[in-house]
Amino acid sequence: MEKKFETRTFGFGELAQLYFPHVTKESASRMFGQWIHTCPQLIEKLKETNWKKRAKYFTPKQVKILIEWFDEP
Image (cartoon, one colour):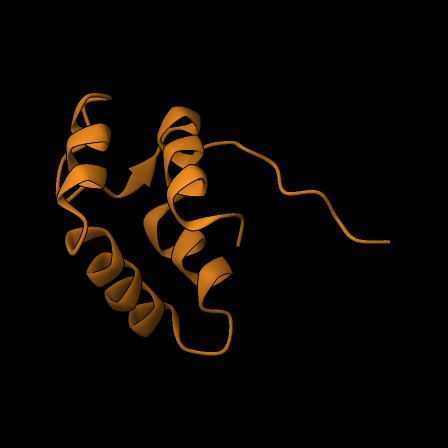
């Protein structure tokens, strides 16, 4: 039985590791950051939720935006 993805507050590295499970947390964070920063429209949507470039956490609303953009991890 597959576990359903829970939309909740995630640490940046924690969410990054869900998208990149086979690398270290640091590498996953760097790769996830690159994904985000190559999408200006995504950055604008995140900024509408008061997201900052160096944020350490994503709110549930921000996680929903990321899932809409990248699909569930």
